[in-house]
Length: 220
Image 1 (cartoon, rainbow, N blue to C red):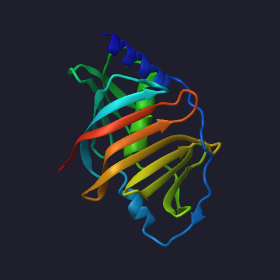
Image 2 (cartoon, rainbow, N blue to C red):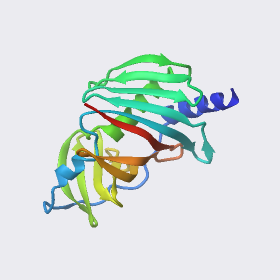
Image 3 (cartoon, rainbow, N blue to C red):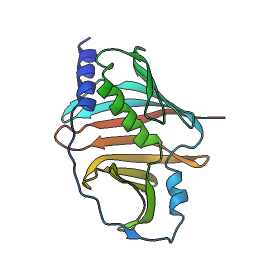
Image 4 (spheres, rainbow, N blue to C red):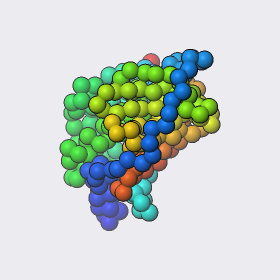
């Protein structure tokens, strides 16, 4: 019970606290010497998928009780469920492309609107291509697809880093507020699926999600 209460408080703070920026947006050197857009498209699962991950939540020096995350993609909606290792469903919802959501189950404090909105944004950052216009180029030697959504922010997609990929998001003030690092990618159809993901937000109350892949099923 103590572990569950700690996890609840931890996750509530995870999505309701304001996180600050970290590093500035690096300069992009324009270039068209490779299939940038095609390579960046492999970062995001294409078609219908169902994933399950073991998720560890870290904030500062504190680590929450691990949970299992189940995510289903159907090309439009994102379905997500968070389940304890004992089988208790903490949260279950469908997130729609227009920003709407249908919450089917939410145990307090997971019934907070802030929690659902924060979870939706993290899932969209991992699984959906960024909005906005795209510029191809390089940061140093790394190929980058830079998506610019005026008034919202900038997202850099790096499709080839140490055999996998990275995603870095920046505020309208050009400061990084989220990074996603994939490791040990495997090619499944047109998509690169990492065995391990680490999502970080930055600032005084930044948090880390450590996601170890359990299953990845491409649903025909």
